Image (cartoon, rainbow, N blue to C red; front, side, top):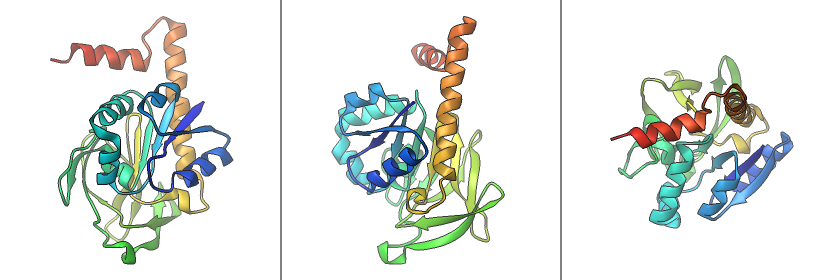
Length: 214
C-alpha cells in the first residue's frame, strides 16, 4: 500500500509522519504524473485558492480524475477542494463529496482553537485553523465526526473519499488517519476480489460507468 501526500503547500510533512507511524509507505506528490503510482492520496490544509493556482488546469484535471477513482482524504483546504459546492467565495471543486462547504467559517487565523468533538461515539481532540464548515450534507454522505452543541459535521465520507474540516495530523490521536488507511485497504481488497472472482473491480466499474456517461 503506497500513500501519497500532496506536497504543494500546507503541513504535508505532518501527514507523512502520521501515516508512517501507522506503518504506511508514504511518498510526497508534487507532479501530476506521480498520482499514477499511489493507492491513495491525502490533500492537506493550506489555502484552497492557492492550491488551485499551483495545480493549474492540467493538474486540476489530473487530480479530479484521481479522486473519482481512488481513495482520497482531504483536511481543511483539502476538504474544500473535494466538495461539490464551495462558498465564501465560490470556487470550483473536485466534486468528490456531495457537500456544501463554507470557507473560513470559524474566523481568521487568530480565532484558531482546539476543541473536543466526537469521532463516532468517542471523544476526539480537534484542531481548527481558519477552518471551513460543512453546511449541507447530501444523500450518500456518511458523517464520521461532529463538534459543538449543534453536532455540526466535521468529518465525512462518501464512497472512497473522506474529508475533515479540522487538522487530525496536529493532534496525537491517530484514529482518523487509521480510518483512511482502513478505507484504502477495503478498496484494494474489493479490487483484488473482483479480479479473482472474474467480476469487474471497483475501478473497472467506475471507468466503465464514466465511458457510458452522456
